[in-house]
Image 1 (cartoon, one colour):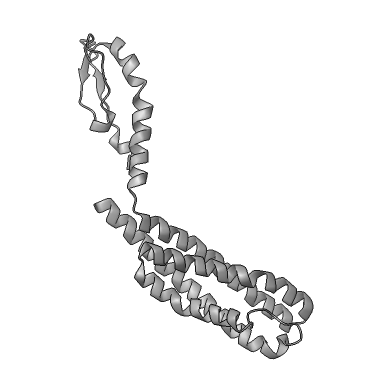
Image 2: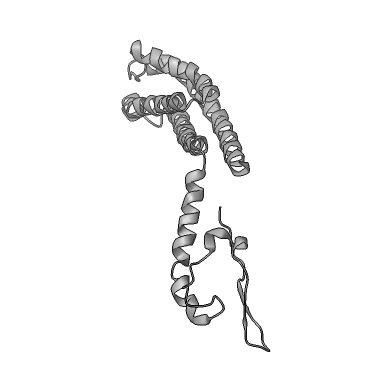
Length: 204
């Protein structure tokens, strides 16, 4: 990756002789000077320096393309797990509001039911990405929760029922606490894997 420290001073003018000393730049910044002109002639720098921004851009893009797909995948997983974590915190707050009678059961169920399927789908998508990319450790970490969500959907017990919510509220709260802890651990696990992937690619 190109840093500012990589850009060196190539042309230094002597205050006495007013001559230009040429220092060889990095390979990706070497510019084509015209054959009929010397690199020490100022007039030859004008057409050559026009290509400098393009060389810098191409070099930077090549570095970004060289970053491993695993690193980008785990970066995506970090953002995904953070969003799911905040979603579970929202669920816990809603449970507390229901217990304190700040919201009636019908509004509570209508509000939370619209987030149940998106949460399951988001987690399932993450599992599929781990499967396709061959990240077996992350896949095994998520399989139990995926199986639990699928079981709830098959048994049609994933939606909130206003007539049963007070009876099943403790169970829902335990599930929310468990998922909050799971997504929190997943966040740090994905963050660690992302850093390791980027470092490994940088050392390669």
